[in-house]
Length: 485
Image (cartoon, rainbow, N blue to C red; front, top):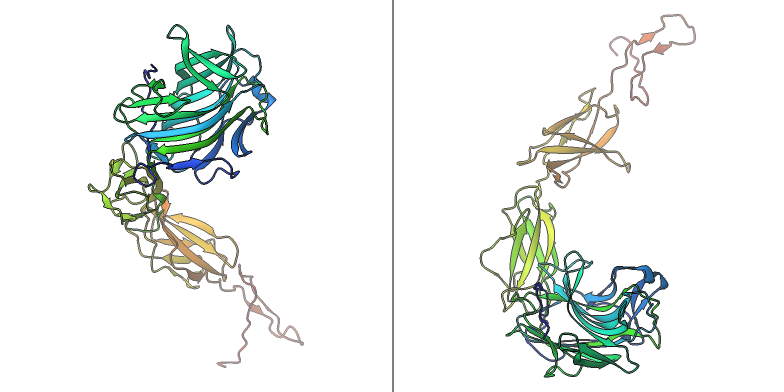
């Protein structure tokens, strides 16, 4: 009876871990105290948190959350795996949603649940994502007062929320009695504060069912056209949420928690690992490498600078291929490379990295050794495709100084005369530079002393010799000769 008008293709999918459907595809008891390896922790606000404690994921809020008009969320999301909607799925999780500390502010709301969203081409970055959220909790309605609810909601790109369907019930000390407001308030679902929620997705009919009893519950709530016909992979999030709440505490009697998430049927899909594109390392290509993806039958490599990505090879690469060289890349242009695993459904998970084709390093660098009194003259072989060059000058352990030139030569007139410097050169192409050339040393020649004068018999104790000082000189050598000696 639940329908999904306008719901985007972001819902249940099959989990690809082994490539085949099997029981206990993934199980999480939240008893190891850490999110890794299957999960990444997220919290949208400091006033809400999710902590593995007492063998479960406990949701807590602080008093400062009472002023939060937006939905605050905390919990785990899938870490480098996702579900796929091309086969049937069975997912169950245990929850407790008895938020005794909720405030009496109108529209205050707290609860726990599971969310699912389209993972897109790459691993989804942290943040609020459009998707479906199935939740159980408590709301203080301005007209009805405190009520329990089971909700299926759609979250849009803007972060706003729209309820696809919401079952409300009057508060009870023992059970949530949910009445179907579209069916003359007939009882629609009955669950206790602590419950296991069964979600079953049937791919052939694009139907999602929800039950507090079993996967095959004939009276299960259901959502038709759950993915609007687009069977895209999805990521999964589990945790709690709050809006205008009072303080919700954790510990032994924690009122809000999730535990024992089990995927009983489906396939888990993981992306190629450690995707890396070279950053100027090679002057003739960009090298893209990756680690094998479980269950992959092959790979596709895509390149994107602007607009739509282009597939670099028309046929799929074999599953044994984990390296691809893009020799058609334009020199110095940075691209985003995406490696997609090919799975039996022909639409695998992907991961990406940026990279660019490098510029050759200049060769045959030569620096003059004192032949010029005004500069150290440098030359090197021109590099094809280079728009300019950057010269680096250093001495000892001091940081180098740099100079730019558009020609394959440079005269360093700022070099201190008589001091030996080490020079290296890089080729430039836009914002991309090559690695350093082989180093070469050079020095600027010293000027000749001028105004040399010697006393002629004026002194009886010796001859005084004088001259004009030379810039950069640390000392002088005086030569004396008799005749042609």
